[in-house]
Image 1 (tube, rainbow, N blue to C red):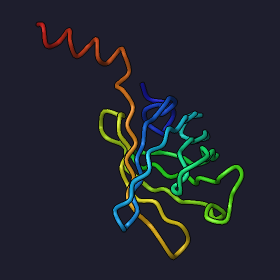
Image 2 (image 1 turned 90 degrees about the horizontal axis):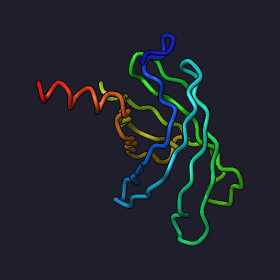
Image 3 (image 1 turned 90 degrees about the vertical axis):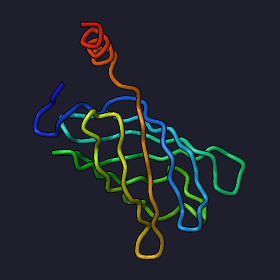
Length: 131
């Protein structure tokens, strides 16, 4: 399912987790739209201090297994003003993106995003296993 030089199409719903250096983890849901290697989309997550759901916009790109995007919160509070830069690697089956996030020079951590395998690939795999 290649699209342009960007590789597999990343459009879809991704479940993710990002981790701070102190071990705290925050889960999120990302909706990605892939336009031939250019990425846009949104994320939804619980605030790290609890309370309201935080929404953010994403813009980025992917090519040859490398994925980069910037997350900007829609209504940034004091803790959410700076854009967050994500740099990761796409798994060979196109179902995981794993890497690091950075906020300016002062903090960073790891992230992982997962989506189900495309239905057609799952069906093909089962057909091969039965043969």
